[in-house]
Image 1 (spheres, one colour):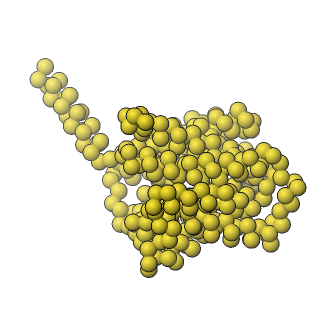
Image 2 (tube, helix red, strand yellow):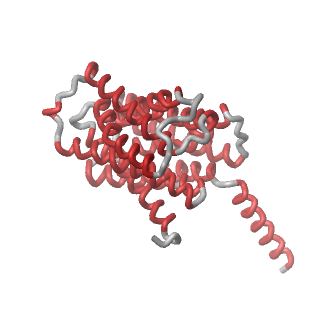
Length: 310
């Protein structure tokens, strides 16, 4: 493939995969209990990830001295937060769930400042404030429309975002050089086994009640979201800048919202749709590199000098 078009193709792939993931979770949880659905998702994904790890000659095990992190990642990156995501979609629409999760870059930046000592620029703090305020207003508006069940969905999705952000920071600090496939392959298998056993005791799933749509949704989540999305996203980070890869978080909520309206008949209020603009702009501002603002300032000063001369 022409390398010139590879970044664009990967970018579109990631946006489409992650944008459709939320609708798939909404379909999956219609007839399959959330813990079992998440466990089945990773049971499908893990053999494929293990094969890819072997193919690309990446170790299946974390380095010596960091093996305990395999269990930590399995539970607190895969098992619990992904279960919270699909559990939350029992109470809120896939489009609204995607809006909440789109704030992942904000959560990562905030936790990085707490645990890694990351210093935020004033413009980033401003963007963070605008994004968080917009999200609070959206959630307040939607909760008033949906009642107490909406609050449960918000808390579940919010907990998943916070847990993922903390895990991202901790892994960055303690497992920096662990390859992507190593990080995903065995931990997802461990997570799947733990979730399936837990589901047998808590949910006691009845396979005969599972619909074809729900089963196909879980298969889609296991193959495309858990494998294709991961590979495409990290490959995008390799062939382009981390900033370009992070911009996906601005596009997948728009795709998820559109699909939620077209296929599931869900929608959010007009006020919330309008609040999406400052929310996404706030996220974008926090992700822009310092060099961007320096160049922008320089261009502005240059234009002023030209006007004075003329």
